[in-house]
Image (cartoon, rainbow, N blue to C red; front, side, top):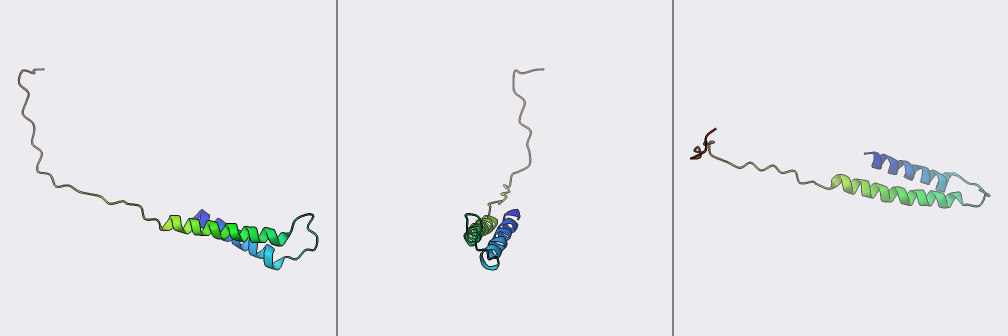
Length: 80
């Protein structure tokens, strides 16, 4: 479940940086581009997390019918 939460956080921060923050000069990088990158990474992480959550693992238990336990006959020639 941490993957889903982290992905949603990345999507939220990316959307805030992309659509809500405006800055003319950010010192060499574009904040909108960082927001788009976080949005993409968040969506990919969310898809991977949900797909791993939905993968069904095989946990079938098979019970085999057996008759009652029969003690094997003692070996000949062997004494303790």
